[in-house]
Image (cartoon, rainbow, N blue to C red; front, side, top):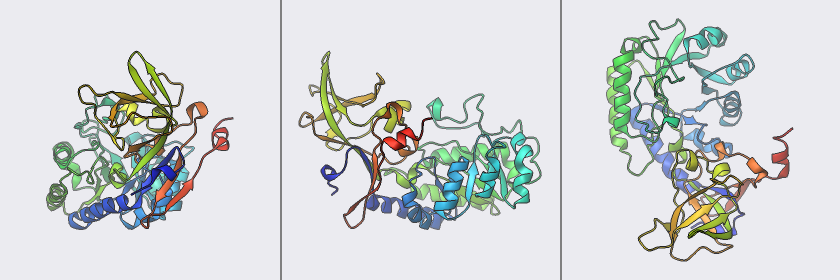
Length: 376
């Protein structure tokens, strides 16, 4: 049991034992499906755990020059890189750190592809199969008019030099959604599948979720491979590696009551430290809290920034929160640290790892100089 009271506040805490359970699931999928599973840095770029992730994956995928360099330097191998746009300012650094690169458009491949091919880098093209189960437009890459990927109607011929195709249409999805996506790919791009060497199925495969059917995923991948035995199949889940592996620890600093609404004011910010709670939106779980029943006092959690909407709720507690109490948010490793900001100069959470032997290590703390160095 982790003792949150002894930790600095605020802080993110990754639990190695929870990570181990996820990695065992991912290893099983790799072993039994024959597909490659690579880490998507867009969800978690916590490079202090890269050595562990490298032992239980087939590489890592990057979406920028900075991520590609981080993969190359800290993951210890070149990156699979995809970005919506490459520029003359970043392409050379990306190519130095990558062994696969996917282009968002034929025009981008025509502009930069020869530089990659000369270096022996495998080039791919992102396709838009015009199917996605994602209901929130902010996260749906297949909305009408999407800027992401080439539709079948736009891709009459496969450009010479393209060795792979890449689609990314899922988000915390299940095998049934992947099946529909693959059906859309085969229906719209099937004529091209025998002309490429690899198919990257992107992310969104939440295979470490308690309700995810890994047997179904493995069977689906095997079935697809039987139809296309020459293809290397690649999955690049982001959330799955660090799903429910850690926490964000905060402290109640004040209690505000206004118009019958009770708000526990915290030393963390939803806008700065948990932005998906406002963007998606969703309400995270809190250790020791539950959804309010009829007649229970409802508590909002208020963030520390000056943004009026920096709050989330409601929750109920067996004992009313008091100043000094710890509020521990669950599942706060993926898509948190990578999306944080220092808006208002609010205190940035430290990063800790709860080790398998029960010890806790602080791997990074932040202060004034981190805020100042981002400004001019």
